[in-house]
Length: 159
Image 1 (tube, one colour):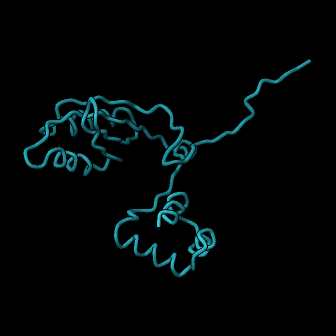
Image 2 (cartoon, helix red, strand yellow):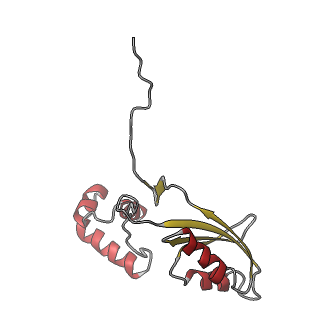
Image 3 (cartoon, one colour):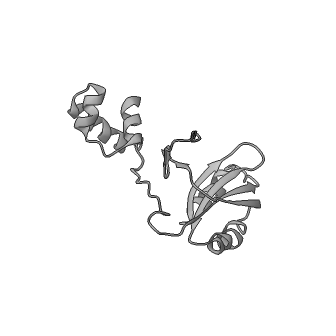
């Protein structure tokens, strides 16, 4: 039921009763579907989005473009698995185009992220090259606009 998954993805804190009203279904059916989705790993995890800057916590995020040599019989998967096991790594994607993996890494400083790249990531057998791009500002994350300040953007007209 795609509609239920859409609702959960937008805000998992809604009660089954609230979602049942929106979807015009019995609450017991909604609860059973949610449990089924969790059991089948369709729902992998519920997540809270935090604006760490507002919370006063310094975080540095980098997206690293990684070129690798695929391994016989496992392709890119073995190297990707080795990379995603590091706690600093937030996401790993196989990409088409000029590089093979996109790796998002988080640390407390530029130095910490740079050390991860130089001592852990670039030393993995099969990693040919890396390009590190540091995020300067987060505007939108997981479909949520961060620090939304809808203001009037028209110029003031004065006599």
